[in-house]
Length: 305
Image 1 (tube, rainbow, N blue to C red):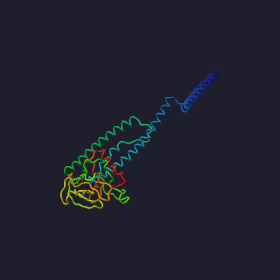
Image 2: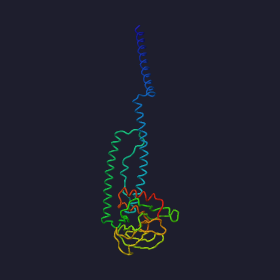
Image 3: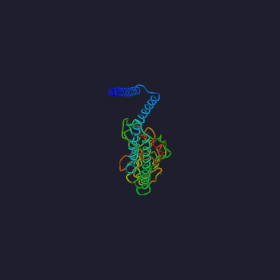
Image 4: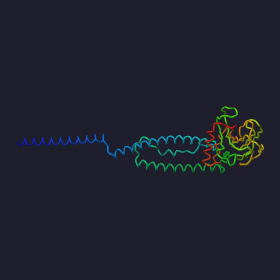
């Protein structure tokens, strides 16, 4: 009799346990199904917000790629300028790469922003140190250690605006021959008779007087392989073999029968190699005007001579 009671009790307990397990399992399954199929208003709002953040993040990544391309182009231009002016490589900007962009993460934690801010701060400090070192090197060059390495940096025309900038070095359409031709200088639009000045101290190494081609020409030797060439002059005031100072007038803007409008054709040569004159003029203009001059000189497809 007692065994039957125990057996019945076990059956009841077992049934209750099976019922509880089945109930809990069914509840879990129903919750999962409900969570997958249905969502609360708060969840829907969060999903929309996450979608917007994801879209904005993709846009930011695209902008970052565009900016990176622009930075690469500026670095190349900067390298060219330092190579022509100071015969050295441009300052390294490796400190900028200290902050990494995490493109594969769907969400960025607060710790990421804190670590990124700390890394950015450290990078800026390194860059500031690099800038100080670079300025010290340039000052050493200017003040005597490499004084003979400083090239001509002054504009040959005074009070000129960037809008007077024409085509610079490269293949440009020639208006006289009506075909693309190599252009070895930069055109500065000016009125006939406007004064022309020496870009740096030097010795007048050549004076050509002609009504053909590039007309009257004055060449100044500045030392260390640098020469400047001033073409299409009207009146010539420079004398071959004489020393000349920076900003001393050497002539006036002229015109020849083959030239459509008066302007100065200005060239810079280093050891006989043609250089882009626009790379030497940053010290004579504001940063804004210089950037506009660079753009206009590169984008103008037709020369004036």
